[in-house]
Length: 98
Image 1 (cartoon, helix red, strand yellow):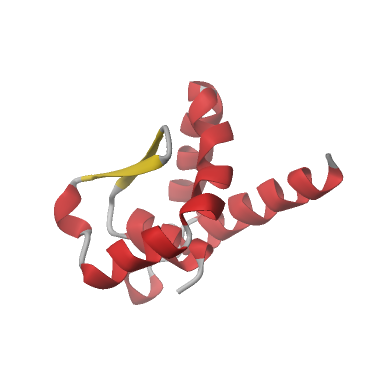
Image 2 (image 1 turned 45 degrees about the vertical axis):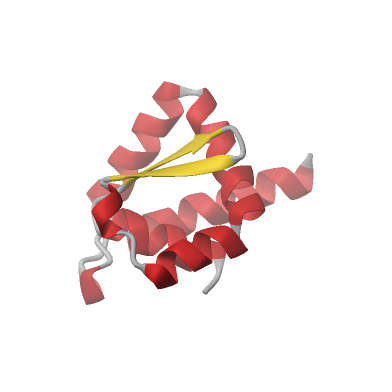
């Protein structure tokens, strides 16, 4: 499972995903299963690379979440699939441009 898929599933299940140093905190923790835990471990670096800049700016984080919820797809239970992917791609493009 890719970093993007992992994040989409977590957000789609209503979880808050918070970078905490080299760790990733998921609230509520009961959304995690063995597959998601393994995916977080496998993709930790990429997830942190994406999450850290967002966490550094509360306003940017709130705006991204609002956008995700306003445009999200509910297909297959992934409530924010479209927008989380869009935010992820935008972040990747910014990183490549820098």
